Length: 309
Image (cartoon, rainbow, N blue to C red):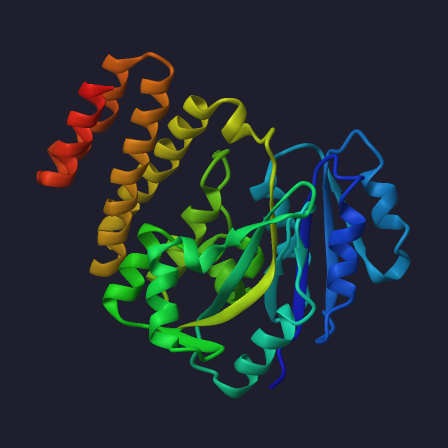
């Protein structure tokens, strides 16, 4: 059976980019079943931009509650059997839905699908591609050996994907029923909420389809929250992952290992942010839990690097 995609676009003060995002969905070679824009309490003309598309877009309004609540609201209103997401400042490649839909129609055993994407700056300049910049992506590219699609299914592949995933929210396709079953995106977290959901999804998946072609564009903003206040962003990252660690006892071993590895990296990144801010003692305290939880050369090296500043 051919899948019907509901594309959910959360938007907050996105009047300058939302039309481009919507147009990229309308231009798909495999038409979306519906496009749902969730206006997350914008104070600009975001809602008017969505209304300009008439019946082609379903507009949902809510008071400002964050991206997770907005995505969940869109998913709750969706009538398609598959969900795809797109942030208002990013856009889809023309075949993004078709490449996933055709594979889903051929192989009903796929639990979810993801794929490669491009990083571009605010001026549109290409900065790189996701799979090439992540170990898990390079692993899958090697396995694909030039093929356009490859299945992620071995314990090593799943562990690497959770530890350092290459597919972002806008390349993920997930059955709506599974999304609802998992409870959607977690609320109460400002950073890494996508990783939280993706990890729980992987924990319930055996076969994940990977398209080794760019499915869209992720725009890197110089003024993003992560760059404006890296210490606060990395603290929030660790807080979100701490909740995943709490849940990880119920995950399959490869996923649990991936979560542990991701936490080590998160604590190291927090330590680096603190060290660059002149807070060396706090930096050491940030990485010490990794040494206690996972004694070994990598964790010890992280502590030593904080001591050396």
